[in-house]
Image (cartoon, rainbow, N blue to C red; front, side):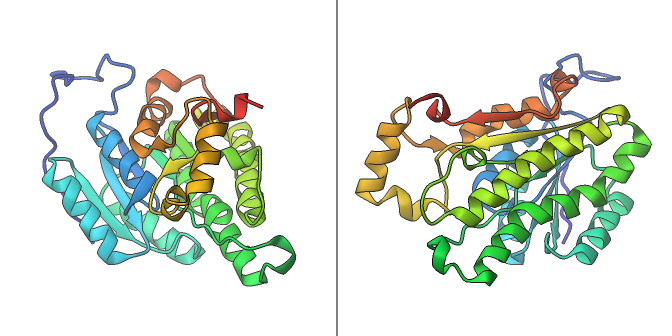
Length: 272
């Protein structure tokens, strides 16, 4: 599926050449995985506001179509690509179609993720593996498909959506914590490998954010009290509060920021 519309005029646009605003994404194309809902959709909208052309990915074609239609209605230049980020052949084929039919990917946000909770001692192997496949291996597969073009062009921004669970865990999320911990180190490894090609790779680490994936937790009174007490800000975060960091890491303003994990968690990791 591919849908394109003309972008809305921007007061930050310049008549010719690159925009002088270091945070502007005008003239750049961003691919966001798992962008049909939640954090991925919010980040896509935020990058669109900053001027980027958007390529949204999701494994659910109906959800993807709705997301593309919504952003199209808001006036952004939007493309949709439905593919399974855990299937290497599907990823390679789809990224090649994007770059051949739409244009090069300047920024990649590896956002696709799932949660499958269970006590570690009884966790089924398939539940363990599914979370590692989607939350960790997919970032390797999609980045591998995209980075060749970035290396040839000697420019690129790659953002992995990490988590505060890169650093801390709690019962029943061992698979998720292991995947996100691995993603943190994958992010740093990619930064080290490709910095010489003028490619910056960084992680954005959300704290407890209200999304469809955390929805059941937000209505559990005891857990809600725990999170609000544990977080110095005293509340859950919202997806829109991650946008500024994503725009920054996608922009020229972050040209010398590499291998970092920026946590947007209301201060949770700073507190005892």
